[in-house]
Image (cartoon, rainbow, N blue to C red; front, side):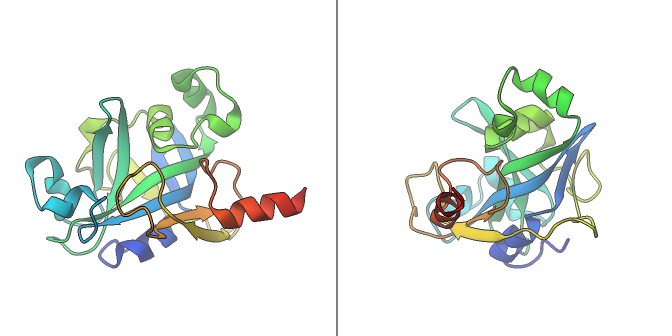
Length: 195
């Protein structure tokens, strides 16, 4: 994948690709894009030691700790010097599901990886992977298989933030039950119509 382009284009194109770490893997079904021009992005205040990876080469992992608890995984995008990344919010488990269950404990299948902290715990993604290459590193994002179903992408506003909440920079596969809650309005409407 070409990460050296608009973070929003990269975000859309990540839906349906495979995130793999060790024996565990899942289909990416939800992401959010962040750019240095808006205050919710870690890169908004400019380069700092903690955010150095965000301003480096595209196609690397930016992993940070959220609220001192969970490691969250992002894919760095755009040209070096621009602080932009895509937060991987949810995956649909594909491989190593028993290992994921062991790491996550007794949870329902849909809750195994339907959040950014849940998926990193299930895949054992930690801060030591900050800066890793996503093409050929220990954690990889692989192209969508040729025979895979085409994702039905819907957009919505990002969740879990307090700044720039109005930006429609959340991208989800409307056909996946692993998208985290609350679902974007288009997904909620489709789910109600299907009842």
